[in-house]
Image 1 (cartoon, rainbow, N blue to C red):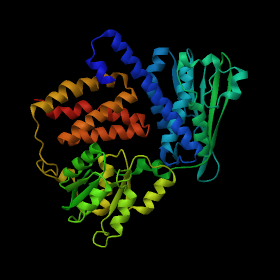
Image 2 (tube, helix red, strand yellow; image 1 turned 60 degrees about the horizontal axis):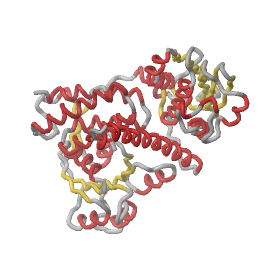
Image 3 (cartoon, helix red, strand yellow; image 1 turned 120 degrees about the vertical axis):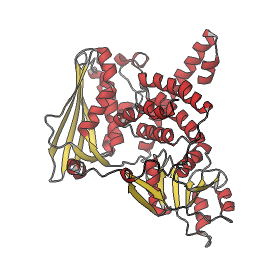
Image 4 (cartoon, helix red, strand yellow; image 1 turned 135 degrees about the vertical axis):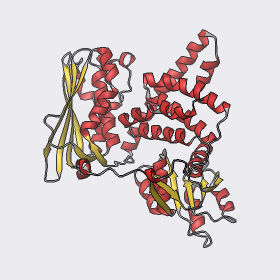
Length: 450
């Protein structure tokens, strides 16, 4: 539909096509919410804890809403005066999702005044805290008779007509269930025409000693990784994914072969013994599990390490993959993620980048032609400028996918790594890092200027 919009000159048709695009994006949002809700109800959504700075997280989210708030004349404040500790072990992506919903709702229904995010915690024992995050607004509030429906899926206050305000009526329901999965709860107080207070409580959360101590760590110099000459078989039905992996591997001078499914991989392995195999799980003809079993049953090739590749693993599936394969790499992944997996199985050396001669590089030289430059500066860059103004996540992801496809096919390793980082931060809802990396795109292009 977007290609039709670009090529069509009839204004009536362009309006119809724009309606299709808008409806499609709305439907995509609804489907995404329903999938989240379905995973929670089926108990297949896994909580993945990591080290989180909750002050920085709230600051990032308020920055995301800063332009909208400014346009509405509303102030958003993060108040951490009552916070004793700020570093915890939590599922950052899910906490971010909850706060995006709570703060986003407050901003949507507030037209004057302010929104305040209060961060409060109290020790539950010597290593754990109870955390309370309050979102207070001066918005339209929720009428008393509608308050028992707030967390019911697909329900919205008549005063909050989705034709005016948008939304699916799923955000708060999903947020409440996510909070419960994280050993917490969400409650609220509200009065029509006076505002609301939504409170997220998380109980007995472990403090992060690692983050708290980072200020005392010495910054290690950047390392250049050089792998021993090795061969890799890439088993993946998606051509673009194969190209991305191959491009990364070529940058380290690996020899590669490709198979589009497990049956083809078995045929290749009759006359080929690679040092490592990357294996997609969901493939036609023969999937990753069956292929793995065939390889392990063959004494001639059963010693080859196999790294599973998947984008859709949740809950027990991740545990099954980790217990079956030698290692697991979740898509999308960055170049660093790939390097860390390679280092587990392929001998390597590391050298401080500052010790390397300026001319030394493990990356093959890149032949750039005029078509490449034309695409970069007349198509990619103007499109990046458009998306950098609005900073819509959908448009950012779409641009990163286009850049990734171009970079993978033409061996532009730096643009490929940039694209994968953008997609990774977008998937993790890491807004600060996403925008920081996204805005570095022009600097990547400097060396290609004529």
